[in-house]
Length: 283
Image (cartoon, rainbow, N blue to C red; front, side, top):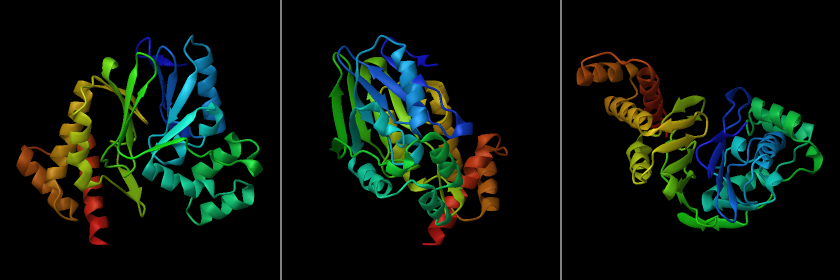
């Protein structure tokens, strides 16, 4: 079932147990835009069946927010103009070179090119895998792109991110809504989950320049402005406490600066920023 933000904005909620991210739909007077293609053919078709229940203009565009498999493996199903930034396109070219038969998938899994979960979902939710190949994009942009769906402007921008270097956000000015994909999350490198500390403040700056009240996230659906402000505050506060590879020192610094011990997500964030320092020390 689609969640309705307005007469023009909808989203299909994430399903973390199936590694399905949030998918977005923005409708103008003439055309509709889909945000992210889904993690499989089945995910995409589940979304399309929900869209068919609405009286909305035909889907003309599909934008991929970044080149992680759960956001694009279903993209062929939309028969739409596919839009990516140039770095997303470069990364996705690797996936276009892959074969999707059982033997190849097992080789990719063993070589850690695909996760076990990714392989399982491909096997279960992508039919005709022997002939499966990702479509090429129709529009490749560098920094930003503006689309008019018919009295509905959408701004696409590649932003700085703690998650990936190729993160694209989609902002709808008259709705004060921004689709963030996974841009505000951390990532995993060499089995360590971390937030890219150097990108934190630049990312927040890039996102806060948009006058948004509704924030659609890739794996948590929707947040309001107060929730995002709390998220930014927690990230900034914990990041300031981390200056080395020592979690103990980070905890001490946090307690000195804030006159209390970290609570809730703060400890998780502290550990993630310490992991980032560890990864930097290994370079």
